Structure formats: C-alpha cells, structure tokens
Length: 101
Image (cartoon, rainbow, N blue to C red; front, top):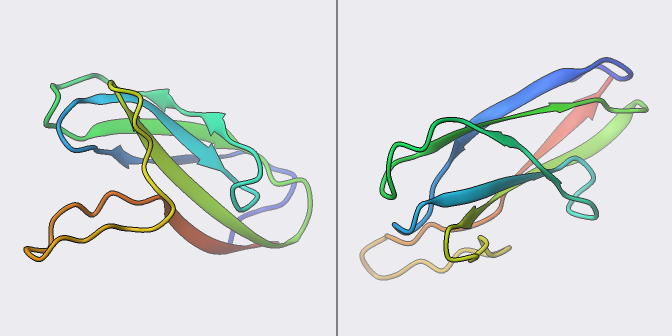
C-alpha cells in the first residue's frame, strides 16, 4: 500500500540486451504517461543500472506502476515478453498493481 498525497521514492534496476541503459521511464497511471527516472552510475553495457523516481499519487484507489528501460541504441522494452527456447530475452515492461490509501 502506498500513501496518497505524500511523496515516495520508487527505485530499482534496469537492464537490456548488452548495449547499456540510456534511460529508465516510469508510469504511475498504467502507461498513459511516462516520466524519466534519475539513473545511477553506469557500470558498463552488460551491467544493471540503478534508477530512482520520486512520485506522488494525488488520490486514493488502485494504480498500475510500470517501468521500462531504453538502451543506448534507443530500443525500449516491449509490452509483452519474447521468450526464446532457452528462456532468455526477458525484455519486457514491468507492471505492478498497487493500492493507494
């Protein structure tokens, strides 16, 4: 549960297929609007990249948080995953339903 009317900081890690992370974008309204998160130190093209984004929910209710990474090549993560037979390529927009109280 997240608070309404009070700032909270979302944070996590972004990754891509090996080009390196150029940006991480966050949506708090199910993907209607996106905002860029602040990125941590770039540790190389094959490493995860930390990100942080302060957000405030204006009202109580249900919300869907979404996060997507954009590579140095400008490639964004797709809305649906594209698994290969070996189980790799889990490149997808991450979504989490939350309650705002």
